[in-house]
Every structure is written in structure tokens, then in C-alpha cells.
Amino acid sequence: MSTLRIIQKVFKAIPTIEGAGVHLKRAIGNNRDVGLFDPFLLLDDFHSQKQEDYLPGFPWHPHRGMETITYLLEGEVAHGDSMDNKGVINTGDVQWMTAGSGIIHQEMPRGDRKGRLWGLQLWANLPASHKMMDPRYRGITSIQIPQVVTDNRATVKIICGEYQGVQGPVKDIVTDPEYLDITLPAGLQFRHRTQKGYTVIAYILEGAGYFDSKKENLLEKEHLVVYTDGDEISVSTEVNSVRFILISGKPLGEPIAWGGPIVMNTQEELRIAFEEYRNGTFIKHQKH
Image (cartoon, rainbow, N blue to C red; front, side, top):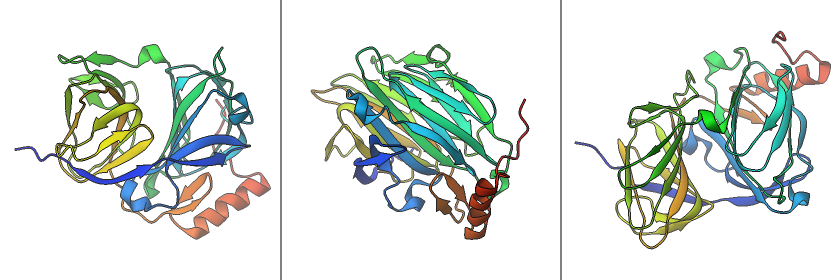
């Protein structure tokens, strides 16, 4: 018999400024209990129709010991990195970057023709055994992301993981994550099996819904749900539709030493990483 997960905590995304002056809302990473989200470290929602909010962008900066996952819902983001990857992330695309031993990159938002920009960036931690792995870049276009329409007209886009036997394009990730973009019309219920023991979170993009079977709180956009353990979640709607991302992953249960864009296990590893960045020995990988 399956055990339904219930809501453990709810957080409201908090306005903040990041990069060279990008205005965004942070759902994970505001000095909240990092262990609660393990293996996830940060979730930012950048959403604006004002170019001055995002054009400063995220100029060249380093990462080590973690993964950054950018999912663009509206607009464009130009990018480049120390592995000679460069191009444009377009609406509906995903950039899954495993920093590993170290990568230096930049992300410069441009918006769409109407000046709109909307995207999410998720950081996923790497275990000690993989923190110094070779960096890896995956650019996933919107047409590569499969979409399933359920019998009750819910729409599920599968970025990573599996839904109804359909596999997402991102595979072989050490924390075994699932990343789904789900739209549920009004008056319907969505149930989904989850791996017991894994961290499961939902972040609401649009509309409003009930995020467990108790239906005690109607949750609206820019709220993050952290679930208790179990092997199934239930989301339902009444008069409104709801769009949300559902993310899960295997907790690492390891110490975290976090300094800005670098996440290691000890303060000494963190010190070495920043020292290497300063003296020009940060990049370990060979360009292809």
C-alpha cells in the first residue's frame, strides 16, 4: 500500500539580487535549513518584463562541486564557458551543467521580443566522490523534452526522470533526480509515484492548487512545498488551474562547505578552490 506524502513545510520565494544586478526571487538558499532540501542547494526564479531587472546578467564566474540546471520558460539567455561551449538558451530549453572539478561560465539574459524573461535555476549538490569529476555540459532543446498528456488532460513535461514509461532526455545523474513541469487544469487531481527516502519538492509557477490530500491550504505561485517521506504525492485543483515543477533527488547526507558558487565538503577544500581561482589553476579539465 502506498504512503501519501504530506506537506512538511511551505516557503515563499524571497526577492533578492544576484549576479551583476539581476532581480529574482529565491525559493531555496535563503540561509534556510540546507539539510531539508538535500541534495538541492538553491532554486531561483527570475521573472520580469523589465529589461533593467535582468540585462546585467551573470558575468564570468566559477563553479565547483555541484550542478546548475537552468530551465528557461520565456526569453533567451546567451551563455559561454571554459569548455568552449557557447550559444543561446531559448524558450523551453534546459542547460544542465555539471561543474565537477571546476568550470568558469557566464549567462547573459536577453528576454524575448516583448522584453519578457522567465527562468529557473536549480543547484544540485554532488557527493564527495564526484565533486572533482570532469565537468559536463548538456544543452537540451525544447523539442527534445517529451510531453505526456494524461487521461484527465494534465500535461507533464519530462526533463529528467520518468513519467508513464516516458524517459526525460537528461540521464546518468548521480543524485538520481526527477524534474517534471506539470500543468493541471481546474477541477482535477494529479497523483505521482515518488521514490521513498528521496527529497521531494514542488514549486508553483502559475495558478493555485492543493498540494496534498488534506486540502488545508490553497497555495499560489512563488510558493515552495517540501514534502514528508512517502511514495506518492497528490495535487488537486478546484476553480483554478495550476502549473508547477516537481523535483526529487537522493539525499547525500554529507557535510556542506558552501562559499558562493563553490560547494565542497570541508572549509579547507573551499579555501583551496578559491585560492586556485585566484592563482589561475582552478580549471582542471582539458578542452575538447
